[in-house]
Length: 493
Ligand SMILES: Cc1cc2nc3c(=O)[nH]c(=O)nc-3n(C[C@H](O)[C@H](O)[C@H](O)COP(=O)(O)OP(=O)(O)OC[C@H]3O[C@@H](n4cnc5c(N)ncnc54)[C@H](O)[C@@H]3O)c2cc1C
Image: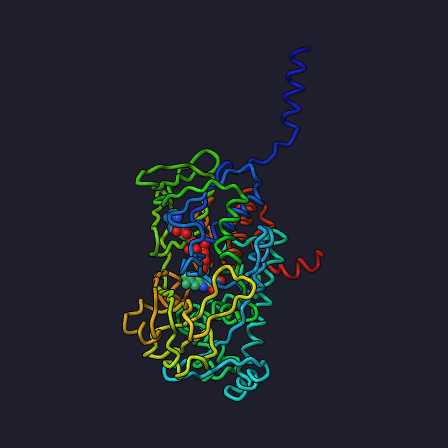
């Protein structure tokens, strides 16, 4: 009788399906928006029982950062988010954060000698001026950007249905076919010329916008160019209190175990079942290591920041090609020299932001009057006859002479040198995109920046990596790299 009971129990054990094993430990390297978002999305996929350790060598937020002038904080890294950036919108809502109150202001473009384009308060007058100077080029540009954005927005539907892509090329192909993949090879200048945008418009306007957003020329890839051209003053926003609050908020929400340490190396250890990854890191001068089932690298692996070496991988994990582009932010508290821009009377200078076109003498990309991260009711932008906080973006630190040229006088200057964006020209015209899967359970998020580098692109890549890791872990191959997804979803619905 006892034997019968034992056999029955064993039989029942075999018959009752075992729940699939989830990963027990996951490591994320980097606590910028990419690392914070992937932590949040990984927890959504795998559940709260999976331990996630997040390593950060410097500060939470990465390129989302603030600094303090006169007891108020200002964005010193990425200041703006596009209104169609749905992951960022979702995070802000979910975390109970708010959009910062918008403070209107006008833009102008400077060509090294004079202002070539000046925005006015009147929408129709602005349109008329654009038409007068550049014909219908601006309409062609608008239609081109809208088409790209419309296709890009498909990613939210695909991700809501838990589809993932194993490479950036597959992701882009699903959004806009081979044309979208080619947009990472072809330059924005060439692409705009091909649709009939005039060279004068490209030289005067497009080049200034690309310089202000990427610190580079119109030779950058068309996709990255379209993303920066999509941002117009009316459709950009920021987080009240600072954009970096999204990163700290997501980490608090997920209760991730944040380790303030620098990851030095990742080694592969094979086991009978799945590979194990050993993460070696330095914390307060001490070297330690921990083992993980999955590791997500959410920091640029290019020769920038804190290098990570890879051991025992066959084939070896290669450092991706290319370098990052230096952009220097100078936060200046002082009086703008409006006469440099042709306005001897500062009272008549109406602009809050001046972009500069690509010219041999221009030593800045943009100069912009900043609002603090907390905008109180009744706040107004300072006029040039008052001391204000200005952000100057430039290719190298401004010397004393340049500071004296742009500012009549100043109280303080704080300088941050960023390895800000991929240097798109550093990889040659082929511009192949870095891989997402480095090994079975080792993923790389920041390759996305070589298609386009922005806060939302990192969030999109984070969601993709979380879905990809989940779908691969549970062998859900039908949810990876599905062709003709748009059509498939339409017929499913
Ligand atoms: C000046 C400037 C202006 C910008 N303006 C805009 C804008 O207006 N709108 C927009 O959308 N985007 C803008 N961007 C781009 C945007 O900020 C980035 O694309 C985005 O923040 C990248 O986020 P990330 O998390 O992928 O990388 P990061 O923010 O760089 O985060 C990576 C993190 O990893 C950490 N790390 C690196 N190596 C290691 C290691 N070995 N061990 C542990 N930790 C490590 C780093 O310290 C860092 O905190 C701007 C960027 C700059 C610099």
